Length: 382
Image 1: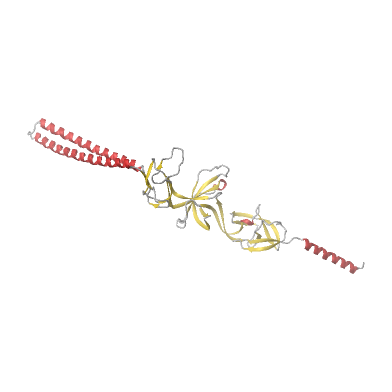
Image 2: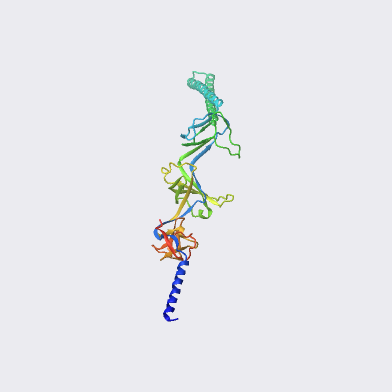
C-alpha cells in the first residue's frame, strides 16, 4: 500500500474513533449554578418541634366550692374587665347571712351609742360630785357611788363597741362566704371557654384529679411563643437574644421577637429528643395583635451576625464542607472553610472567592469531579 493510502486509512480510523467517542460520551448534566456573593450571615438555632403561642396571663378558673350556676353574664369571646363577674352560684342563703349581719351591725352600733352616751353622762356626773366633795358639800358615799357608776358605764360602752366590732367581723365572714360563690375576672382579658350552663351544678376538682375549668380567661395584651430547643443547641441560648417568629397560619410573615426565658431544666419526653423550653416574646405586640393564642409557631434565635461576608446558599454545601465549582463546563470539587452558617446561608472563610460559580443542585445524579455540566439556570443566590 502506498503512503497516501495509508494516511487516508489512518484519517478514516481517527474520524471513526472521534465519531464513536462523540456518539457514546454522556451528555452534559444540566445543573443550577449560583454565584459566591457578599451579604449577611446569621448563626441561628431553631425549635425541634412546633411551638405554640401562649398568653403571658391565662387563668383557668373554677369556683372554690360546689353549687348550681345561677348567673352566667358572659359568653365565650367576650372582653371583660378586672373584677367583672363571670359566674355566680346560687347563694340566697349566704346573701341572707350578709343581710342579717348588716342588721346586727346596725343594732350593735346603736347599743354602743346608747352605752357610750350613758358613760359620758356618768363621767360628767362623777367629776361634778368629786368637785363637790372637795368643797365639803358631797358625802364620801355619794362620791364613791358616782365614780363607780361612771366606771361601770365606761366598761359597758367599751363592751358595746367591742360587740359592734364582732358584728362587723361576722359581716366580713358572711361576705367572704358569699364571695366564694362568685367568680370574678382577675385581670382584663377575653373569655376563651366556658364549661357550664345556667342551672348546672359545678364541683371543685378533687385533689390530684384534673377537670375542665369552668371559665378560661386569656390576657391577649401580652403574647409569647413557647418552643422546644434541642439540648445540644440550648446551651448557646440566653435571655435577651433577638429572634424571628414564623407561623403556619401566615406564610411568609416574620415577627421580630426577644428571648424572654430559658427553662432551667431539660424535658425528657418518651420517644422524643431531650429539649429545653424557650420562651420568645413579640417585640411589637401591636403588629402581632391579630394572632390567636394556640397558633403553632416556629422560632429562629439569632446567636451571632456577620455583615458583608462571602456567602453561599447552604444547600450548595456537601458533606465535609465540599462544593462543586463550575470551571468552563467542567466540575471541580473544592473543600471550603466555613464560618457562621444556618439553614439558608453559609459564610465562606476560605476556599472560594466572590464571583466564583458553584453548583446549587448537588443532588443531581452523576455529579462528580471532572464531569461535564451545562448551566440549566443561573441564580444570584439571594
